[in-house]
Length: 398
Image (cartoon, rainbow, N blue to C red; front, top):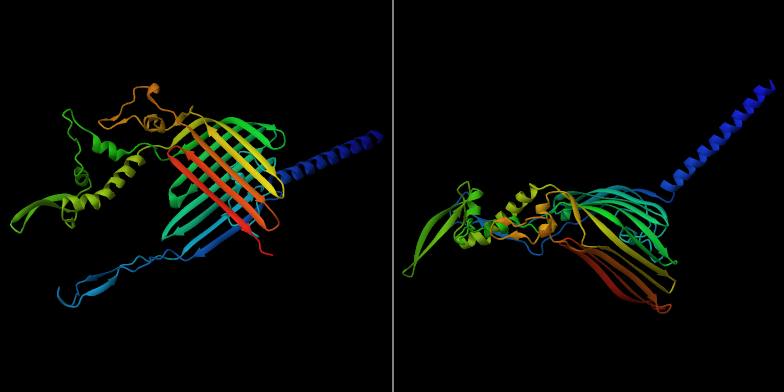
């Protein structure tokens, strides 16, 4: 009996300890994943774009003839109201100088922590946001998925962004070793994987138009692009003041006249055909994925009267494509011959490049009534440059 009681007591103590450990585990898990996070559902409705002036044109009255009173038609573009609605969850620390603009989150917030290499706090941070948007009667889906874990000696980050109204789709994953230097500065180095859909530096229609034969003549005269899409040209002539003018008018596949001269066709319809041709050729290519080394720094100083936060990331010219056709990659952007397409003969022909991102936020309270601030960020990835800046002086009258 004593042995049984002792065994029961031992099991009881063991189970109690396991329950405590289990409870501590879930408590720590909750603290790491969800404490200070915010789940939100939000949306907004706004007036759509409205043209400054109305456009009108006339049509022949169906009950009359060409010289009867015509029907005036309003040809102005009208759009339904714009809207945006989304759902998300976020756990993202703010730096001391960042002030929460609203008493709620709706997914439109911009935080420095999404761009700076180092977080305001150590640990796990994330933003998972999805939304649907209508703008000028076009409907888009957008998302931003951001996950980062910052430790004393490491940074791990995953990100996926899609902005439908500007046709932007980007994914990245990076791992960095981090070295704190004092309390204000940290440097980092690692590797980053990025994707891009657009074949930067590759302009199919330009290559097609500039292709020449051995005599130096154009293989593809510009007007033959119209033939490819079902348009046809027809010779015509007209005599004005005793002078005969020769030209070609153009019809679409249904026989409708779309241009009365070659020049009119090239300045109107042909421009749309060029863009259409490029989109079709780009659609034939798979997405690209590139692996690159990455270096970064983050310097942060904060006092109530003065603060400065400078950060940057540099991707040196040692990029390696691991997804997509390398001949159509950014490495080959300057090797497209105007004669017969790519002129690449091997890896030695590919041209590397440098990418970087840098930002600075500074504020200075000169007195209780006067404050000066400056903010700016610049990003250069492939052919894309994104920058924004602001500077100002605040004077509070007392």
